Image: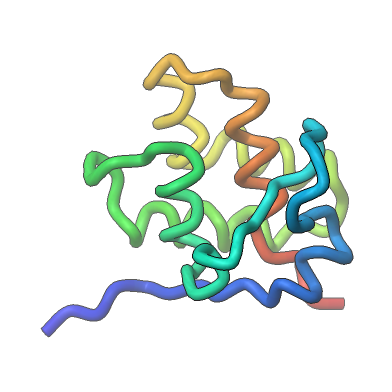
Length: 112
């Protein structure tokens, strides 16, 4: 039996780094409602970016890991852009800026 990769998100940490619940819209925030709290990052990305099964959980997880390994924002952006997930989003014809900002806000931060 194959288990899917799981990356969980600590909402308290995420809120401190730019995620928040409710209170209007802003481009640099993602609203998380109560139903999203039990989702891991991969499921949340699939939901938020309407990602279907054309891209695997392993590909998404490896893209997030590559982003998480970078310490500064510019390096994280470049990692997201050049990742398999970023390339797939670009090829899909989506609003790449918004999609990559969503990925960056949900990707874990490098441990110091």
